[in-house]
Image 1 (cartoon, rainbow, N blue to C red):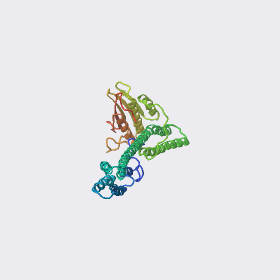
Image 2 (image 1 turned 90 degrees about the vertical axis):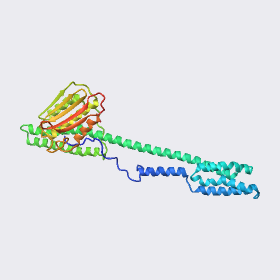
Image 3 (image 1 turned 60 degrees about the vertical axis):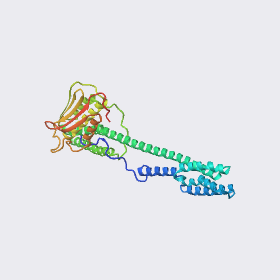
Image 4 (image 1 turned 180 degrees about the horizontal axis):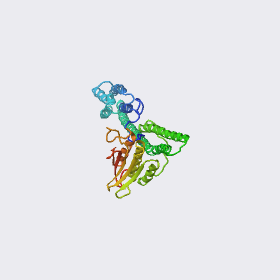
Length: 382
């Protein structure tokens, strides 16, 4: 069946992010930069020079009062008090260096004054408090940046998980629902044309059934296109049931033969062996899609389904004796034009480590051939 969309790999990036929102990478980067800058500079980065000058003036006044305003020790006391307070001016940019300089000068100033140097001790407390606050702020900023990165990673992972689930739902809708709707259309047309003495009203109703089925296929094609491009919400979860495998191929062939196809055969070559369930599911879905394509694009053509167990691989071939692809079409062209069905089959084959080729058959018609690994360790089908 042509192009109902299988929801394979998504080529589009995730949903567009509006600038200025919290998901915008530029906004997150600017926020982290502001947090880091505030942690390093403090809430009021311009107050450090003011505090340093004020404490330096207080230190000079303390030196004058302690020495009586005269004597040879006054210049030394003023110098030590300035060294114990004035480095606070640089605490905004070099907090550790300023704290070390203040610490080195407070001891001699206290010894010279024969008592606590009040201005120096105040500068010492402020300088080391600034160092501690900056380290705490830096750790908080790093933790906030790490949390933001983790949230961004989780959002991205959730988005990719949801996109993969939508793709899986689209493939299952394409492979299962579209197959059965196509069967309804084919059986209605077969009944209308093959039943002798069909009343006109009955023929008209069967024609309406076929038209309705084709309309449903068209609408499903649009729906699966939406799922494939992540533009809509996924539908309700399908009813849980065991996944089909190669053992169900005979039922599938009988169903196709019963729908009015000219002739559908299942040919098995080699020694039959149990394969990985994912490989068997992939083979079943490829055969199902290829039979749907044959009914749609080559109605009435005979179809051969062949399974060739070679030991290392399983070769699945589906060929018909219909008109085949259009003249001038490439080796991978569909007989009915470009669609998502062939793309879905290729993706399924690649998902288990195999490959799929399509094109005209050796004596006409259309051929789908998939080579799948026959080992028991194949990856599961999506």
